[in-house]
Image 1 (tube, rainbow, N blue to C red):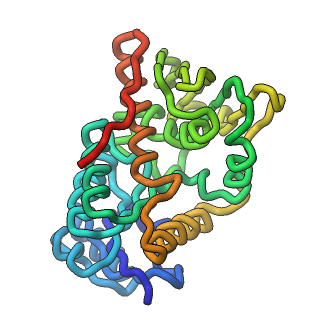
Image 2 (cartoon, rainbow, N blue to C red):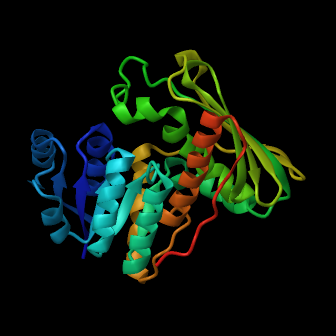
Image 3 (cartoon, rainbow, N blue to C red):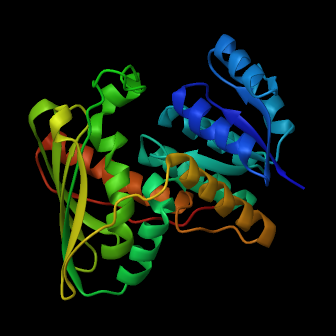
Length: 306
């Protein structure tokens, strides 16, 4: 029997990635759509032949799992309600915009023992999965990464996104780089941050095992400077991470597979679950403080949850 999903969100990412992916997946059934804009929710639901829901809890009552494509602060509230209702979670990055919100999600998931996946796109690329499996035990000294986007480029579907413009590259594209660096170098202990031109930010990270990494992020940079480049260095030499070799839709299909696998096995837990999502938020929050206060900030470790 297919896992019944409720979709929360009505924007481009919700329609073209989440809704399309769930509707096409043989192990999933898209049941209904909820959105803050009821007209958009109705239009998206009609497009996929499902029901629009005016109430969050009504949709939660009719499904087994939720897929959330909303701004991170809104996602955090929906995720806690869904987990407390016993629903499995397919969430987007970043998990939340504050560490307390991320902790509340982890606590709810732990209380109800539900499955969770945070859709870090690069982590569901077969070449990246293979690279990380081969690199996790390497004697790495550090990494350098650069992710430069151009959100104001004409035709960019996220160009009018308020939360992206408010929180910038640190919170929007920083999770992509961290999702690749953390599995290889381990958790981050300390962060320094420096603002750069055009809203960019540059991070220096000290990992708990002693490695260091430097990350440069810009969400609204020049079109000609767009890049995604992460390179590790150490005893194995200098090794760049592979570029994505699947479409976003194919990566999302794999994320749904990952959630279904947990549910079928009755064993919640995945390398990109909400606990990993919380680890990423902890680094981002510390970096935000470091940038604002121009000092080195300690990253709080994960704490036990009730």
